[in-house]
Image (cartoon, rainbow, N blue to C red; front, side):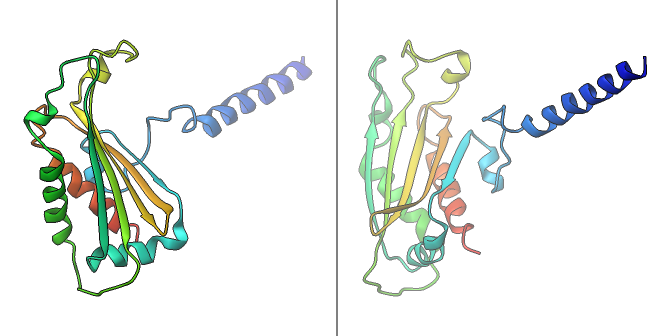
Length: 182
């Protein structure tokens, strides 16, 4: 009988231990927002090169950056996004947003590349699973690169069909990037 209790106790310990260890890894959507604005919509981020973060953020804060951008329209449903925003308008919003974070005006030979695109959510895409995929209007994907090396990548949803929340989401992207600097 005592052997049974030992086996039962070991089983219970292993069961709860396994549950505790795998709790976070089993739910990829559940993650702690590093910056409060990331809680507003679904946001994913990845830091690819910690060694270049300080220099990259300094380049942004001193206005030493270039922008590469595009808009990807829906394929299966009638695209509406260009009725509300253009690449030029999006670039102006981004430039205005970055100006709020400029600290100095230093000319540097290196330039930070901000490569981003706006993707319109294709709500008629048969590959979409569930109704949750249809709750957002699209998403922004930003990559910050220095000398061809990816430093940071962030994706954040925008909700409004008229793209009126894109300025707020761009501000969150820039804020998220700048707060990487220690």
